Length: 134
Image (tube, helix red, strand yellow):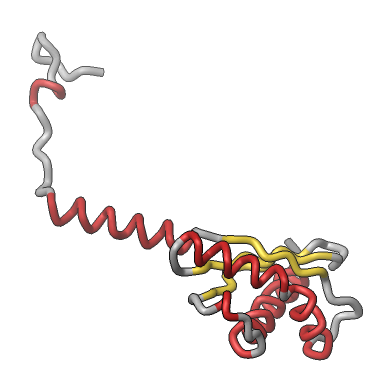
């Protein structure tokens, strides 16, 4: 990805985050929403906006539906904030990487708290003739 596209994606992420946090008044968006990443097409025709939504699966579906219905408003709100000739079409998508990371850390913490270091079993390391298995 070119340096220009990286800057455009970062700018879009910042501005869309600001719009979602302060300008949208949809009750479906009551849960915590984080814009994690924006992938813009090279011709700037569309941008995939990845969002992390904290909450139950039903809350996530409602919030994503609210974001999708607000995509036109978000695009219109971006127009005066950007110096681009054209503002891309906005497509919101769920990104569950934050929740997967939190879950992974929880699993690691549980494993570390519940288990002491395991001593290797000598029988599995040494073969029948006393030589290490290869």
